[in-house]
Length: 115
Length: 113
View (cartoon, each protein chain N blue to C red):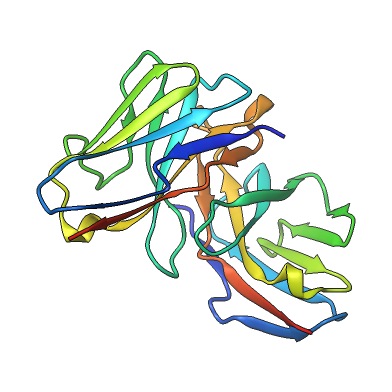
């Protein structure tokens, strides 16, 4: 099946720094990718939809200036958490729709810990 | 807005038994309802999809039912094994142009050997 990778798998950073997370579709092209955040024992919450060649679409309550998304190619989307704070510590997961967009392939996730 | 409810309490069953997980939703019926498996520290993995005009779907030991009148889906794992222990997520696919997935909070299944 289709594979989606994320890098890094985990990251620890100091408060106030910025962190970039990459999401790649390895064997298929994705004009759309989705970014989710998951806190412990909670569900995946959609943060934004990344669109290749255009601006990302953010969900209500998600600050677009804090969570910068760039979808520069058909296989790569990046999420940058700017000026990270401890409350941004979470599990960040990306996904890309399968053909016909009926399902999504998820990346393995990135664990972010902000000290 | 659409709400999805899954039993937040963990389901603890004996190996070999059938596990049944419930997903309830409010508002409009989705065109597609999906089930995913998530292991700790990993991303979700797609298991099954059922369409609004389908009552039941099977895949090996898995079975999903979809009742649009009750606004409920049931997810069954027959002959359960310890390796089936994981969190199972129900998700609805938004059939507008966004194709967004809305997830339930998941139910943790523990299969005892």
